[in-house]
Image (cartoon, rainbow, N blue to C red; front, top):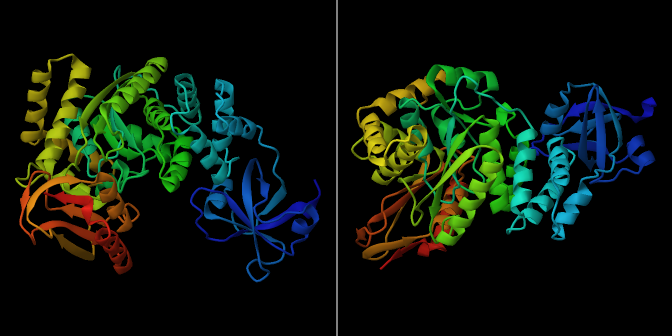
Length: 500
């Protein structure tokens, strides 16, 4: 291949999330000769690595002549250093895009077609727009059971897979989400691992919520573990609480979650495949799914919960893992804090048996931990519940949580937001309803989860009688602009809280 298609790599320092983007001058000889224009898909080669990226064109003052700029993700993926020469050409046709378009038109996809789509997404052959098109085509119940099984299997195969041969049973617990503040996982993992269960818990960042388990745990300890570090933590403590992105476990899931977050989209089939692919790749054999049900939760009613549970069971059976689903109350938030730091405060309060710890978070965590012990040992519910309460109330769970954090790098002090604002009830009466979805949006507008300290803390729960002027919640933010932005949203949505 002739040298005229080589340019020198320049790190532009531009964060495009995980979408690979390259930058070329409009007057670049290659641009003009090859007919490259803004939004053209290019194949970039360096050594043994190659990448399909989207072209942005820039003015002459931005790049030196003979240079090609890279976004941070593209630079990292190709392993570049300044001044290296890279080869540029038109991107080849991505054959799986025809299957993706087939799905958009409502047709079923074969296992081979789904595997090719997932492979190409994992290899960064899809632009964000194309990933969004695939996710949208699969949303709204458009995936059959056979397609969900094939999608899950393809996502597992897209990365590494752990086999815990020394542990005959490996457990995990996951909540489908939609309920702000429902940060039971760190408590459940501490209790269940203190009881002797093996739990290599890997979590994703938040998709549509103000905080995911990984976001909350990152406030408290290091969650960015390599596969070797994770295995070391498991061997030391029997459990971990880590972010799954670094370990290459179903890595395509992280690429799709990033786009789902932007779309505020979390379809049933994709949800099941996302959850189970991560768990299966992490080596789990027994998985407990928490499904909060409520009018403003992700799962709205019992019929939707049954349908989702049936999907989880069927896909789990097809992929040789045992899955149990537990329906829980999703009518109001769990705990008092919403947002990474505020949820972390609730977690520590429960583990430390603080008198002011949120009772609803404590009881829900005990419920889930008890079901895990029943799955593990075949004990009666009463026997398992007695064990979990003893572990929590005698400090066993707190000591186990400290061991896990120490093995992951040590327990951190929870930071506090520099700005806060208290909102009060405008009338007297009983708090009858609260809108989970708009509460989550309120916390996100304040800056969560990007800012760990952003979010809110509730001062009232359903059924509580309030007087006019009593505090409803405190809003926390890192910046005055975000605090004002969230405050304005609440002023226009005061019916988030209904007081009768």
